[in-house]
Image (tube, rainbow, N blue to C red; front, side, top):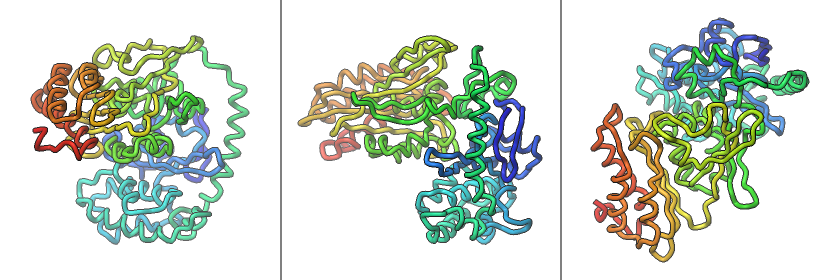
Length: 478
């Protein structure tokens, strides 16, 4: 039995935990404002808000695409559709009014998604800026208006939100009619529901049979939605022991398997270790998908172009896996893939943790990606590099590449060659020649063999130009 709040209503349902939240709100609750679009998390027409209690008792809302949200992940949370944000029939919220005033809606199909994303932006505890406003709608596509009208609406809202206080935010938003008054009562309702569910969980028998593992749903609900709906699932997204990012006494950084891409992006520790992290993560999907998709899920997808996989390969990361009732074991990430979409872990093993040695002061790291669209697209080729240098010489290096072989690749020979070499254009050119011998791209919808080989060359050059702009120039490299 699943329990959660949908708008201002308490929900109890025995619908399959692996079914989608989109289908539940439309077909079970008959809330048709949430639209069915691509069913792949691309268009944003089905965007809803998901409110979750934080350890400090506050409530955090995030935008999510309901087409890829497992219904089971709504358990214990507050789900908000467009029907749940209007104070009274016929009254527009400031978000809706801004879109109307700026001509941001034509056919109207996508408009609900924009409204919900911008409402989520309004509910954020972070300061509202032009950048954060535009980032809030980076997962919403409109085929009618262009986007300039929607950008103007976002700017108008940002100006209004400049008056938002830092405390009692929901009270102010309710007074300004961004959200209805019942939002004030939701934290207390969820606290009571949490206590109720904890008592219920104590009376549940432990899971003793194999089940379909299901995290954020951003892969399985695209690939096999009917299968996931039909079979028993083990929900991983809300398991507290699979969440969080920490630094161990030995210097290793450990991520729980259910850590989301957004958790990664917003982690103070990760931002400290990787100053360019914000820019890297803007290239990884969209805000609603980053709010849902887990790091472990990106690994287990086994895509040759998995962005987070390529990121962590260059950090020589290790994956800890374990099966029900068995001891856990560690697998170097570079050894997790035995072939295209094929893993070396057993079918009943799940990822528990991901760990890597924290970069030392002075270490260099960079992530690059080329895709047909800059945002919300999969890579044609992506690459990451970690490098340690001293006195103009490379001491150690790790280079990863995606889209140039059947699996995500750690370019071992290229990495080994760079160790001990002087940082010159000749060294970079020689490293490129070695890298070309380690890859085996194929022509497909994302580019020809020749194009992908060229892209890897350019990304390798980009790493070095990012690291050593005073020693190298693009003209030297080409």
